[in-house]
Length: 262
Ligand code: T3D
Image 1 (tube, rainbow, N blue to C red):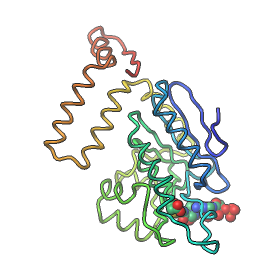
Image 2 (image 1 turned 90 degrees about the horizontal axis):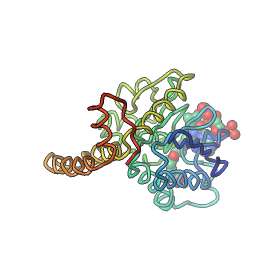
Image 3 (image 1 turned 90 degrees about the vertical axis):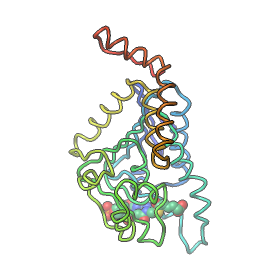
């Protein structure tokens, strides 16, 4: 099923796969693609059958960020604050607040907002040939889509500044060794590995996985005391879930658990 031609949408085994689909423009974001991707994540929020999301791109790129064809300064000065507020920030908030695993399969170049959206996902795999570019510096912009928040936290200020100020491409292996992404995999194995991972997570204890995501994200701004309190509260909630009861029962009965995501 497709919600829009600019984002292909497919559902199987609890996994909603969203494929950015403007390959001729390296899946750069125009308004239509923004709206379609948002619709996909909104569905993931409300549809209990969706238990994991897999985000990837069609063609040879993941995403080259904003479609610069829509930003011709000779036709007037755009209000970029408005587009960030209207499109990129809501997307980032949808990804981070979704209490289900979001897997990203970076199939090729990820530049500008394209790179930072990939870094905002929960588990990001990249094809060995992929590269990440903080392209903003080349056109006088500031990293957005959470880049100035995620980069220093994931790789430290020195590397974050160097990537953002130079816009030098970073290869997938280095991105993995620095902790920006989970793993670099052979190009021809990327989608198989990413799909297998998403399918495995979709069969997992969704409630507990979602609470885990919330806790780890909260750690970025919490004190240790706040985090310990949060762990207590979330563990209490997880301990009341049907999947916890199933997990422990299955362990005691020496069988595989059948999680329902509740
Ligand atoms: O504006 C706002 O709302 C604020 C938000 C901003 C968020 C941002 O993401 S700002 C950053 C925008 N992105 C860029 O500056 C990256 C621009 N692209 C590139 O630097 C290069 O294309 C890449 C390094 C990503 C890839 O290079 P390469 O050599 O592999 O491919 P290419 O030949 O440059 O691109 C292939 C085609 O895609 C080409 O079209 P053509 O000539 O074959 O018809 C190219 O124009 C098009 N394309 C690539 N990136 C964009 C794009 N078209 C529109 N917008 C793009 N961002």
